[in-house]
Length: 472
Image 1: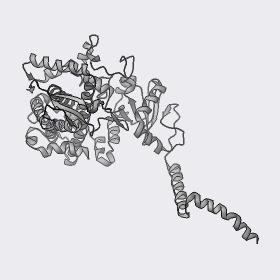
Image 2: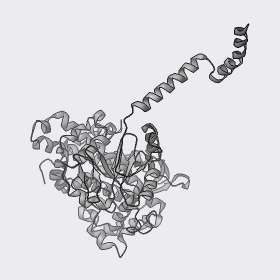
Image 3: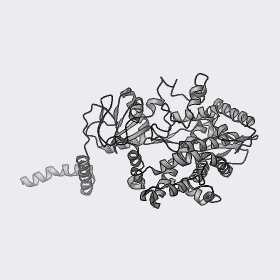
Image 4: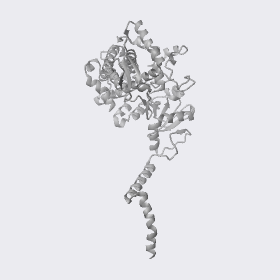
């Protein structure tokens, strides 16, 4: 009798449980999920720090790293801006989910540049950022052969490649951009990447190998998407290899691929962003176009490297777009190879990642007046022109940090500079651009990377009176 009464009393509760969980199977699934989450939390590595640094992007000490990772993927810009404001020029720690990174103020660059690679190693950070264990880019941990070839042989040989680079990019523009004088909707990123691929393929493989070889040009960008006799990277790599690793075909292939991956899309993003910024600011666009026309008249239409490098207004617009929309929010990334105490008393530990917020410099109002405003001609203003001339776009500039800083700054910056200027001069002289529906395009961000979305559309049409620019 008592047992029956107890059973009767429990029946309503059983029905409530059934209503809550639907069925015993759903309850089992819920319990299993809870066990997995608890195990995930218990087993995740704990990072214990006692250096007193502010930690950004971590809500509480025992928060699973997964949540920090999701926030970093979707909201990196706001996370960095908030952390920079709180830190006020002091070092702080960034929790990204995959790793913690110590962000140092850009004012420390001179001190860090004096440290050897036995203390700070950029190649280790580069391999990590490129998912080297998955992509094969771990090879850069062991060799900087491609950097040596770019700086020692390719950059000095660029004058020999200049005219042909101009011709290849011009041919790409004719093929990829509309030839109509009516407004035509197009995806500029996809057109520009093909034009830049012409220049990169020429630099990597040489004139003979890339002549009338569209498949090789296609490979230069598509595979990254999923005074010398041979002024090209692959020839010099084959000739200058000093050990078995530098002569290994697999290593050479990976290094050449890293150059293609690191250049084609970064140059494309930069060129598209520069055009978008000028279209949004017609006064800057008109000034740059007038400068191009005036220079064309002065040199009688024969554009060499010196003429291209003398376009001060174009250079200013390029610097401004790079300042406001860099390729990445984080610059000067290094892995600490051994414990070291910095001059500010901060002890950095072996295995730590150190980096910097580019915005801590580029958005500093003591360096740039109204730093969040686009002023395309700010660098060539009367009171800035001498400094502007002394620091051309391809130089290492610790105010805008386009190419990084120190001995491991971007080795391909001279190639990028020439390719971008050739493309921009041709496009601005030959085409008008406008926004679809007069709606300016915004930049896209994922993780720390800023980019021009490849599916973004603009309107383009051929101008009626192009100058007929030729590169010699």
